[in-house]
Image 1 (cartoon, one colour):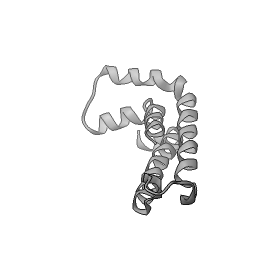
Image 2 (image 1 turned 90 degrees about the vertical axis):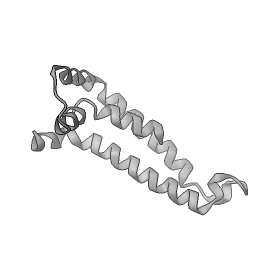
Image 3 (image 1 turned 180 degrees about the vertical axis):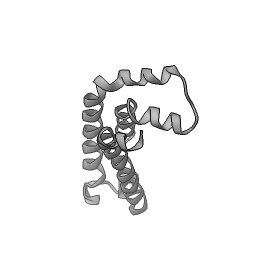
Length: 106
């Protein structure tokens, strides 16, 4: 899930990064350099979706597959992993949708 979150941040770095920095009051000509990540955006999105797919396979596998005493067999841990997965999936969704929604904010 960490790989998915990192890839989502990199995928949205060209578009969402400058907007967040400007909204925090950070400015400068160097912010335009973040647009250099734009050609890599499809690769980062593919990496994020692949990482999420692998994470989903592990998180939503039946608990019977886990050996007793393993982390994946504890219901509370499984629930927290699922919530964290949903949060990361929403971050990836924002990275996917943001280029089309960005004109509303600028």
